Amino acid sequence: MPAHPKNKSANQRLAAWINQGLKRQHWSARRVSQMALLIALGVMVATLYLVQSSQIVTSTRQVQLFREELADLQRENADLALKISVSSTRAQLQQRATALGFVLTENVLYVAVPYLPQDDSPSIESIYAPKAQPK
Image (cartoon, rainbow, N blue to C red; front, side, top):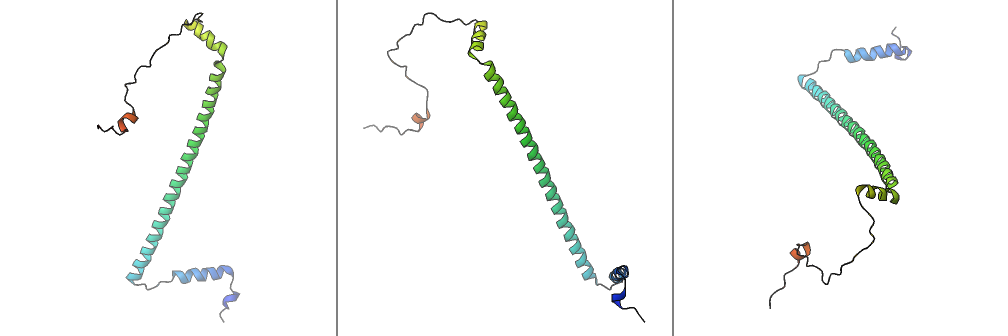
C-alpha cells in the first residue's frame, strides 16, 4: 500500500516535486519560444537594473569625492586667509613698504581742479538710451 503524501519526509516531498518538474513535457515549439522570450526579457530587465544601479553607485561615489575635495579646498582657503590676515598687520605693511623704498610724506600738496574731465568712454546707458528726436 502506497504511503500517504502527508507521511513522507520533507526531503522526499522535495525530491518528488523536483522530479515532477523534470518530467519530460511535450511542449510545442511556440510554447518553448514564448518561454525563451520571457526568460530573455527577464535577463534584459535584470541587466538594465544592474547597469543602472552600478551607475548610480559610481555617480554617488564621485559626488562624495567632489564634496571631500571641496571641503579640503575650503579648509586650505581658510588657512590662507588666516595667514594673509596675520601677515597684513599695519607694522608689517609699513616695514614692507620701507623695504620697497616708500617713504612717509611730510608735505602734501592738494591741487584744485576747476572742472571734471568729460568721460568719453562709451557706456551701456548711452548705447541703449533712446535718441533725442530733432525738432
